[in-house]
Amino acid sequence: MSKHVVVALGPVDAGTVGPVLGERVTFVTDPTPEDLAVAEGAIVRADRRVDEDFLDRTPRLRVIARTGVGVDLVDVTAASARGIPVVITPDSGSRAVAEGVFAMTLHLTKRLKPLTELVRDGRWAERNAVPVGDLDGATLGIIGYGRIGRRVGELAAAFGMSTLAYDPFSPPPSQFACSDLGELAESSDVLTLHAPLTDGTRHLVNEELLARVKPGTILINCGRGGLLDPDATLAALESGRLAGVGLDVFDPEPALYHPLFDHPDVVLTPHLMGMTRRAMTLTFVDAARGVADVLAGRPPAAVANPDWNQRKATA
Image: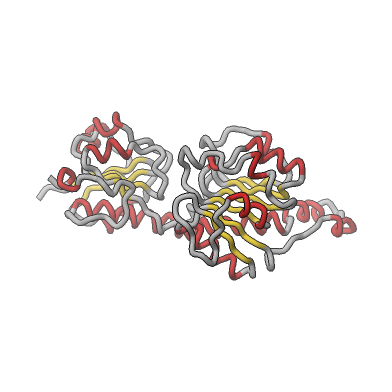
């Protein structure tokens, strides 16, 4: 019996996905044009593009598995038209991203950078000049209350924080819900962004919204880079309206330099908060499981295009 060919687009750990795909699958980590021509599945990293040209070069493709949930670089409409499900892995990195939110929040609230420099430079006597904040008793405002937003809220409770949540697409539970984004900004000590990027949410955090935050607010973006306006964010930092900003995501990526990056109260990471060792293993396993399900004729657990034509994909 001939084997299915599944290809990797970007670095994918063969030792992790191989056992999940099974013995009937040949997994190719560095595919040639010949491999693409016979590939029935693809496991795709976030920075790799799947467009009409790629689909034309993979005429036998039956499933695309994207590591993570963002499909900005995947032509989902074209995949659906060809009956190809676009598998996503929404549960694998949620906890890691939520931990990243609090890593940045604690770094900025506890002023770890200036305090480190103070000790390093022998300026112990100046320690009382650096105000250190608290999470206990503070209010966390969550913009986007999906899997990651909910996990962030769970962690906030462990720190003794109150939680408010605003979601432009689906109202959060009533005990957390804030129906007005401006009201959320006015009430929060920390704002964290987890909404998807759409035409309606681009620059959701803009000059108008930042004018309503309370002075000293911490802003964290581990969602999508386009959710905030970097010029308005820098202006809010310089005015003292924001006390710190943590960014794991950028628009575009790789990040292009912006003066915001030079501000001493900004912490930056290269879109890695959801890519911890454990999270990457989980996302590879989930992606491989989605491919194996489709090749076996089973519906995958999570897809970005629920309207995909399964009849075509399994024909």
